[in-house]
Amino acid sequence: VIPPPVIHVESYSEDSISFSLKMTTNIKVSGYVVNIYWTFDTHRQEKRTLTIQGEKSIQKVANLTAHTPYEISAWARTELGDSPLSFVHVVTSGTRPASPSLKAKAVNQTAVECSWTGPRNVVYGIFYATSFLELYRSPHNTTTTSHNTTVLVQRDEQYLFLV
Image 1 (cartoon, rainbow, N blue to C red):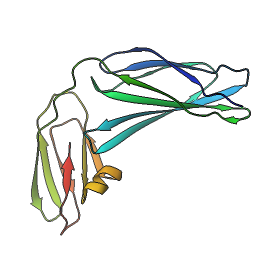
Image 2: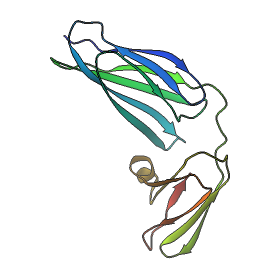
Image 3: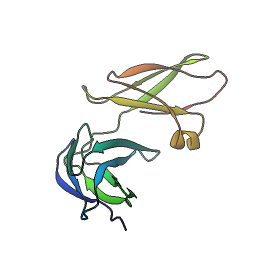
Image 4: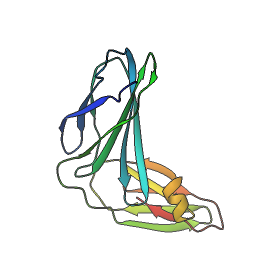
């Protein structure tokens, strides 16, 4: 039986988490697959996947959001197959930034001008869809560091937007 890897949170800050991965077995490990999950607003779950080579590993994941719960899951790739999953939960320190205030205005039949307020020098994600279900499961999206963008949409449809 292949045991799950041990995930140990080494440290965390407002915008990063450092963790180590190891196995408590003599089975040869070729690497790990790590998923970091967090929820954007209450509508969209985000995920970042890391593929790590080697037996022991210390990783630092940066560009995270302050005071946000993150779930880290990992499994090991071994000479005998993949291990079961391990999970840890971490909440980054600091104060979570205020949600941006979004305004969306139709420019014409196929373009919507989106603008919002919020801090500078960050990356914003703009998510849009024609239903709440689509907005949650598979929205269209784009990113920008500015405070406005024009989104191209299908004509004769109503859209929901999140930033």
